[in-house]
Image (cartoon, rainbow, N blue to C red; front, side):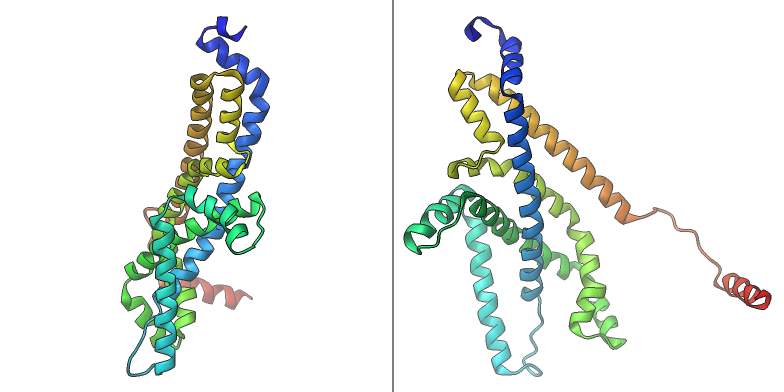
Length: 260
């Protein structure tokens, strides 16, 4: 029956029969991408902050310097391993290898969130480190000059500026994760790409199903990109700021107090 249809008719037929499955698969893809990107950003911020902790050979004790050196070495290994290997290999290693080698049983959903999160964290760690370094060193010096500790200065002064600097990279990682979650079909996650494989295998309509999936992926990434751009614009604020006369504000406050 389907072999007698033209290209558009086959697409319509597939959507009528499996449209709900495509939507469910797209929902799974979005959930994994959003949650894992959020967790990955937290991991990336923690790793990036630790990697930028200053070490003073004169003020810091030897045990502290050794401890930071060991931690930074381990974090560097983590970043290089997960940035230097494909996510599909990481998924297979964690889902199948952890149970066989380390006797750690992880479900496919746990494995999916873990893989995407730690992969995103490895990429975000470098972005966060670069974002912190890009902030003018005078900001930290000024914060410490008014009595802030290093932690207080990082939380209140440095990280807000670094976050704005790396916001485009966060959005880029989210869009990448929306597409790269397709590799999780290797551990039987029923995402959008898994639905595509199932439908095309059942009906032998590889090109038609791939067309549908491409349109859905493109729609999700375009909408996500647009929303992130709006968020960036809101964080930027107005391009022009009205100058305020401090003396005028003072006089107005004085008048209000006199009336009160």
